[in-house]
Image (tube, rainbow, N blue to C red):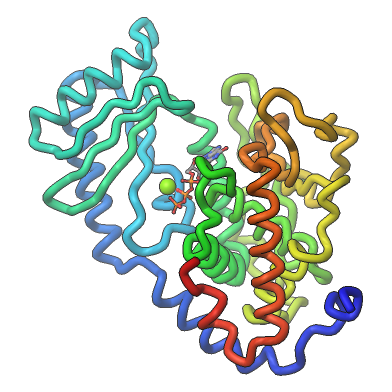
Length: 335
Ligand code: GTP
Ligand code: MG
């Protein structure tokens, strides 16, 4: 039965494009949200520069990678060269500065894996996390944004997958499920694997953009305007892709042996990366290679309990996509 399910896609998927596209449209942030983000960034820049005139602020994460849905928090990276002072001191100083300018809920989390200052701006209503010198995150934000501009179906698919993950409670890294960043990488991988391919592998192409960050060389092709027609030989629509995405993670992915890798545009072996057993806290039960920090498994947060939750959710979604006459209702049902 399972084999049959893998091979026979339901025949009436076409009529589901309109409802999926309507959900996608409803999640796109309004222009005025962008303006508010700019406004807050300008304010923060002004405050930061009174203390560190040469510092710069960069947006990263979903507010800059084009995978941000309406009302997302914004992620900001403070780039500062003055490294005589340690990060904790800078964060505490930042918290002071923000507090005295009437920003609210200001909190310095100096002991987090990625130390940040959190704040809420009462004028725009936006919440924001600020980290220091996390340049890799700024570069992977650019990679994701560049992929999004090659084929519109990536942004559609990723919005729907993120919306599904949030609705079903499987976008909670502290509970052992996956980050939004991991889900977007899964979507990119999936579209690289379609035949004909919908996305190329930018890191395997000629280098037109390159930076070295913390000893890691980040190089890829970024002349996206030359790739506008890349996916045009493939006419799959959003409903077919949503169906196939969940079918892939429910019934096709080889969890025991495979790592997905957008860096190579392929599935690679767990053996080759020595990700076959638990190392420290990394259990490697679902393996998603970071495109630049290749020793970094974005699935490392998943444990033996949450892998079950995750796979059951993929199967539930795949079955709804296969059998439910109106899958949009059930797919996003709160858990
Ligand atoms: P939402 O906030 O859910 O809309 O998504 P987001 O795109 O901001 O993703 P998330 O909060 O998961 O991550 C923010 C950014 O942190 C990502 O876009 C990456 O640039 C960066 N990042 C780098 N490595 C990691 C990692 O291992 N986990 C996560 N979560 N983020 C990483
Ligand atoms: Mg974010």
